[in-house]
Length: 125
Image (tube, rainbow, N blue to C red; front, side):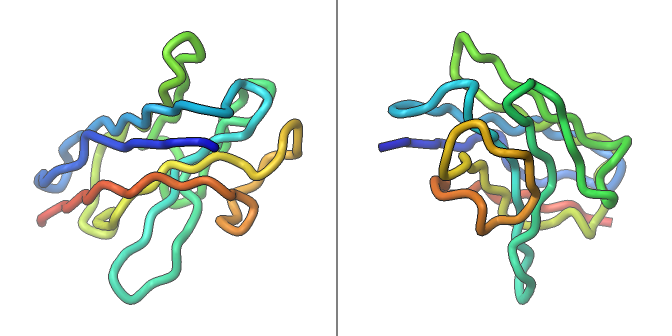
């Protein structure tokens, strides 16, 4: 079993910053891809950023240059630093772990089998 607990969401004005954290416990280690996803009202869940098993980061085009994903393996904690936030970034943000070890990275939500409860991010104009 894997437990993922997000924190750090909130409300900010456009141009502001937030840092999300995701504490992982249970059956997790650096051999699993981990990522951040988001779901806005009325929209499908989409991939935002992923760290692969080599520690490399991958981003959706919509957040490149603004968001940074990182992981502290000693603390089993995943982070998402979000800068220059826009109203269209408003969504519930989820962290997730891949279903299996040592797979090629992906931003597709269906690849991930373990999910946190989500944290709301609201960006006002």
